[in-house]
Image (tube, rainbow, N blue to C red):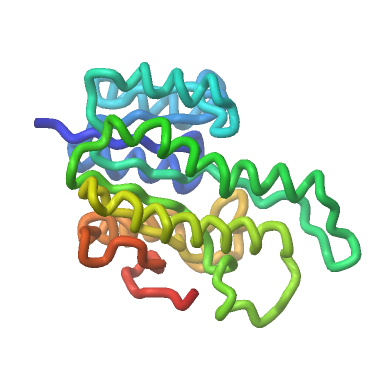
Amino acid sequence: MTKTVVVTGANRGLGLEYCKQFLEKGYKVYACCRAPESAEDLLKLKQQNSEKLETVPLDVTNPAQRVNLKYTLQGDQIDILINNAGIYGHRMNFGEVESEEWHKVMEVNTVAPVLLVQELVGLMPKGAKIILMTSKMGSIADNTSGGSYIYRSTKAALNAVGKSMALDLSDKGISVAICHPGWVQTDMGGPNALIDTRTSIKGLMGVVEQLGPENTGQFFNYDGSVIPW
């Protein structure tokens, strides 16, 4: 039976590359983003894979669209859920941080992935896998430069909820990986980043493949190594 993957933030960068590589492996892909009708690269991919790729409008912070995704998926179980959608927010140094921006980034990066899993978990069978795309900037041990208060804190919080989720879903046979993609050449990572999206996601596909009850809840680098919290 064909396996199914759901990818959020699928319109570009890492999310789009996840879609490409899962299609190459024969998965049925639900590619979710805020405005799929204007996501040119995703639409081209859909034209090339019309039977295997379905686009779904999803703002991860929109409760009605999260419910709509669940009903769109009825009849399909979710073997893998890639929580990739995220934002950096405005870059604010100490003395500039303000709460409105912090709340906005926290809602997208930390709160929405948990609410989406809660909405979709009923469609996930034993053996299903959840990937939370985080960042090494969420590692407290790795923070040697300070700054980036908003982004760092939202990813550290995502790491914490990912660990709790791994424990809470273990009795259902669902495994969770908290994944750092590396410094990648995307709109967020910039042109000077060390690796391209294909290299990053190829490594992360290996992490997904090796994920199971024995290593659920760990914080992985894209090469499979474990990152200190």
